[in-house]
Image (cartoon, rainbow, N blue to C red; front, side, top):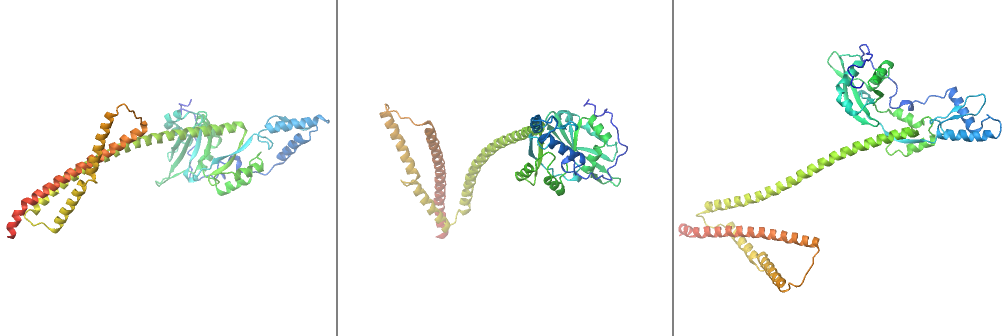
Length: 437
């Protein structure tokens, strides 16, 4: 049972140490694709027999052999069945790996970029992710026992990811501590080679591990060898076209897909990744919504603080005015003060001019009264305005009214300040005359 990580009977390796790593030669990611061994005599005979079954069978010795050849060709296209071609030689077994099978395609997979010294090894469990996460500590302890229970070794989980068909991918690495106190990660190829030993592999299978793989980047030599040698059963022309169509040769590598089962597996993986991306997008969308709410709140606070700053600025200005009046009390009017008074008079005249703000405001009020008057006289007339246009007009008038109200408030405050200045100036004139008489 999966729940018995701690009680599963395993064959513990005796005090295993990774201090002397074993070089496996090639990464496990490549599988059989990276090595293209020379053809053996048995393989050559297989090719000859396949060619005979497809082109010139001599089983019956008459025109029926031509029909048999077409039947063998059909079986080869489908990748199943047996091709009889001679009475003295066993029939050819057609599989989907044969070069004539039509159910083949080439896809692309992302090349890993992890170094061998990162020590990452992938273990695929036939268990759900929730089960793995709930018993992750027991899993780590069981893997430690499989590694021999050496106290200098520590098993760590790098990540857990859901896979199709209720499988879970667990990425682990092992840290080895030396007697002098230093530590290092066990190389991925070394750890993978240890897991591939027969007794260790059976122990992993008892834990539910169906597949293991070292997650290491491909060397330039491995990539070159893979690209130059088409996989078994893949037409060289298709392989060359796949290399040309590679959308990102620096990150993606062509991978053969043989049969509907492999296509279905990749489709499930793609669907699983799409769901994970959608989940991540939903989380990001929620974060964006929360940030937008916070932004709205912040903008409202900023507007509130601006209004408060303006009010404090006016109060500060009033205090400065009174302070300046007290400080200048008893002194003659200076040239800059006289210049400031002249400027204030000019501003007041502009505000009171018929064509300026106060005049425009009076004109607008007159037009409103006239419209009300005409509306009462012509009550029988009906006008219809589009709702969107009416909303825009109301919004515009509201903004105008707010602007005018704010302007009037400023003008009133300025008038009060001018009156206060004039009053203080009038009171200080006799006193100044006494000083200069």
